[in-house]
Amino acid sequence: MKAVNFAATITHMARFLYFAQPNLANNETNMNQCKLFPTLKERGEWVELRFMAEAMGHGYKISKPWGDSAPYDIGVEACGRILRVQVKSTANRTGTGYFCQFKPNYHKKRDYTVEQIDFFAAYVIPQDAWYIIPSIVLLGRVRKTAAMLCPMVPLRKNRYRYEQYREAWELLRN
Image (cartoon, rainbow, N blue to C red; front, side, top):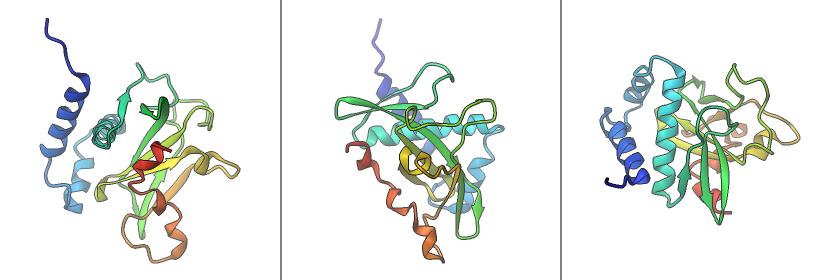
C-alpha cells in the first residue's frame, strides 16, 4: 500500500481550487467566487484549505483538528509548539474596507477566549489578502467581535488599525 503525503495532497488540492477558478487578481471575479458556495460553511471550508496551503507555502507545518468541536480551525507548528488559529473570511465591502466578524458561528454557545485561540487568520476574498491577527488584539481588554480590514488605501487614518497584520505570517514564528 502506497503512503499518502498529506501535506502534498492538501497543497495540490488548494492549488487546484485556486487555479481552477478565474483569475484572483480581478476583484469582480473574486466577488463571483463567493457565489460558488451555496453555504457559508462550504465557503469557510474552502478558506480553511486556502489558509493551510498558504501557511505551508510560508514554511509552516499544519494540522487540522478532527470534527468541528475545537474552538480553533487549524493548528500551525511554529518554534516547537502548536499555535491555534481560527480562520475567518469576508467579502462584505463597507465603504473603504471589508467588514469581518470575529465571533463564533451561531451554533457555538460561547465566545472565543485567548486561552482557546492564539491567532485569527482573516481572508479578504475580493482582495486576496490575509490578515494574521494575534487573538489578544481582538479578545483582550476591549473585546472586538468585528473589524474593518482595508487592504486598499483607506480614506480615514483610523481605518489603518489592522493593516500591520496584513500578510504578517512572520508573527506565527515569534
